[in-house]
Length: 262
Ligand code: S5P
Image 1: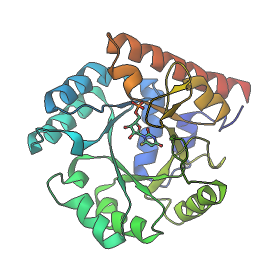
Image 2 (image 1 turned 30 degrees about the vertical axis):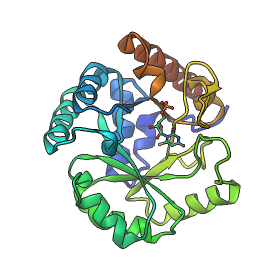
Image 3 (image 1 turned 120 degrees about the vertical axis):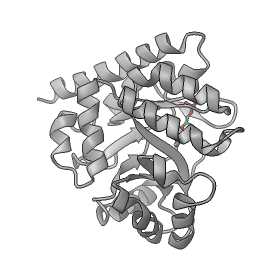
């Protein structure tokens, strides 16, 4: 069994990032470590998912640039739903450029991501300048960043030394970097969040390189703290019922991890 045996609430005390602290506390308060990847292409479908599944989740993960009919009203309404159902919004933008460029991509353009997303993510590939650029925008708004350490897709190039270098880079920005998008937990330091996509109730793949593990494998064997589920829920005939099953599976695995390690 891998990962911290401490409760999420206990781990909140170690966080330098205010957003990481808030998220750790929310996990235990709401008793859910399920994140929904709401990969739909219309504003109405996104709002409907956020409203219906909001009570089950800790995080709503968006790809705002796949929405066909985006208007700023959408992000305002998402914020209202986030407040109402108590979840944080994570825009899965995967920034990957020099600091100066990502700063504009985060703050400006059409989407004004910094105004509504509590959390964003970025590749560590360009080096620490990308974190500094994002932090110039995000720090003053109390936002948090997840670094992508290891992807779920087959054939990715993120080997062990890349992951270690990502962890090392994060350590210099622990007030802004909350943790990692990763398959395997990167470190036993309790303040880092390890968040894992590529999760389904049954292990498998899709036709374009995605690889799935179960919530139990992610949490108990890989040391993940939060599982991200997309198509496993949103393509189900009853997404609410299925989301509850994922929530239960992921939460039970966390409880088991806490108990077994005491
Ligand atoms: O390594 C990764 C990182 C991310 S953020 N693998 C991923 O699949 N993702 C995202 O998680 C991906 O962009 C998609 O939005 C979601 C997985 O969706 P699913 O439908 O395969 O569960």
